[in-house]
Length: 180
Picture 1 (cartoon, rainbow, N blue to C red):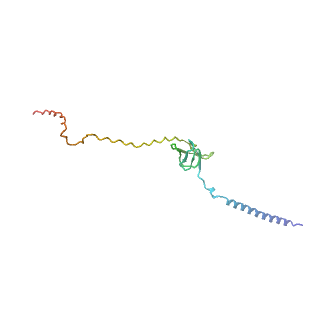
Picture 2 (picture 1 turned 45 degrees about the vertical axis):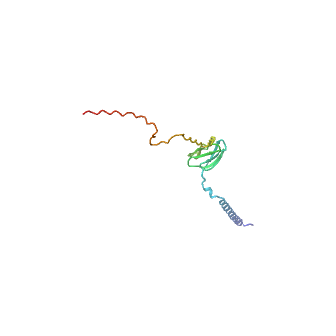
Picture 3 (picture 1 turned 30 degrees about the horizontal axis):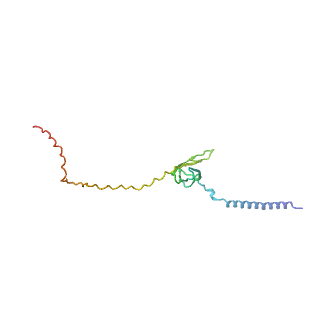
């Protein structure tokens, strides 16, 4: 006959071993989970905003004042600025253009989260053709005047051979003197 107390002891010992195995497995899994955790997940990344850039004619180089740029039509992701910024467009044989972009912040409430948009989006620029370059003119040198045949130099002294000057108007009449 089998001792009933012995079966209970056997089951209790077996249960103790099983508890230890389960505890070691749980501890091992938790340590393995810790090794794959990156501390970067606790750092906040700066918010970004996606901006569509377009131009007429297409193919212009577009650069934001925040740094990123591309060839239109395109899309860039920029860090969310605190204030407005601008987008500059350049294309060969066209005048450059700059478009200001405003950052609009919409505060959230209990039912909606806060959001940020840009105005305008898409950012569009119409580039005007550059005027043709002006032709380069050669500098014009004025012709030197030919010297006059007999132009005497002016002298502070009168010429003795010259005609006398016309007579001056007569002396002014004297004012009447008062009688005494």
